[in-house]
Image 1 (cartoon, rainbow, N blue to C red):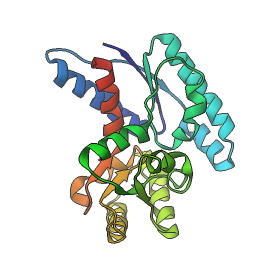
Image 2 (cartoon, rainbow, N blue to C red):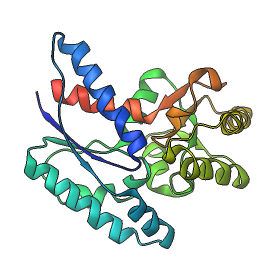
Image 3 (cartoon, rainbow, N blue to C red):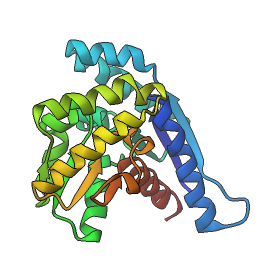
Length: 229
């Protein structure tokens, strides 16, 4: 079994499911008392959020690259960045290590293709929804990606940082997200990507009129498959 390296803590609320999902997959696959070999490097999210707000992505890239290098040195044979937004620096971080890294949008695209969806809605932080670093990896594969309007983008983003990253689940926020998904369905979306690793804690399938693709689950299971293959 290969050893999985996780760069977590962004936020820690969504890092916990990675550990659980990976180990459940390995246990189901191999049976008995089997679980995954995992090394976790958890960063301090407040520091990174300050750099995000200031647009100092180079400082974030240095912190995450250092984490990846340390995971490799500790024995990781595959590395995951346990958040969607920080894939903005994926290519730069990947250059610093020699082991494979699994891009969360690539894993999600694989699942969307398997299930036959092409026109998809994307929810996430404002960086993930409005910038090209994430959407382009899907568009280049032939997907059409829809995002909310400007007001709804702010709503989705605020709920992530003010509530979900702090472990707060608010029913009003769940209703707001459900309404935003309804609007995106009206625009032709066939499915919705929960493109922030915290959103899966708020939106369940029963809260969405569209099939949901939880990137936390998809990403974690892709690592588990790699580890046992």
